Image 1 (spheres, rainbow, N blue to C red):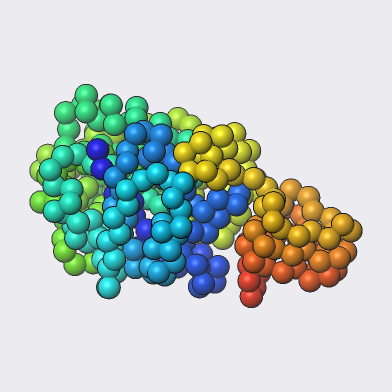
Image 2 (image 1 turned 135 degrees about the horizontal axis):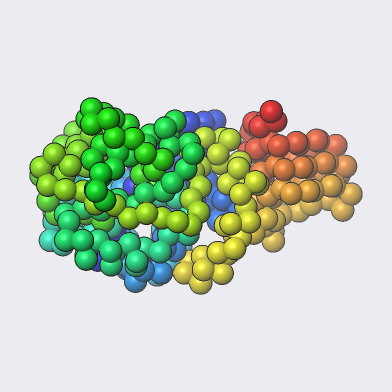
Length: 311
């Protein structure tokens, strides 16, 4: 089975953090976020991956050229004009139209068992299945309408009145018939492909009962690194075994002054933490210098700036 990983987006909600780096390469516990889904793909025995790119495409190309540890055969699909989740997938139809494939977002921090997901999809006989995750925030994120074990709506956009506490978790197993409903221009796969399957065929689901972290906003990115770090650290060995990088709080090549105080914080590669600095529940991205005497409390610091998350 092949996989398609979505990595072309602008990461607009994470700006200004993403001004100089694409979201798939922003580290979570000192591992680029794209490595988490890549590890899950390898764990499931998937070796052939198509990755679409647009924003900072050169950075993602360089990452794959330098990351031989992934052990994956990666084909880069570059979009001169961004095509969205639907159009980007449609562009690669000829590479994926011969058998079911796995679609996954590049910014998923979760402990999915993709092999179980694939097995359940095959047993269902449906043309598509979505990974769903239960959360109290479903209505604000965008809930999925369910009926008799099938996906029938998203955010009530089809007017079914079906609501739930489940969201689409960013992973799907799809058959070639999805391409009948996709559009070549900029489009969302939810509005085209998924809705096409709902209206004309069927769309199944698989309920994920582990953990799932969103990193789409500065607050959710900070929470994934700080408040929810233990769930990710618990699968550190799984990640390291597949991609050769282990989630950790402090990068080995960070320089922290002996008289600096660092508590519950993530310190990235090549960071310098100056004398007398105090860091509490903060994320310091790679290459950031924290000046002497600086106090960071619930903050994200990056080269050229910082964001405070204090309530």
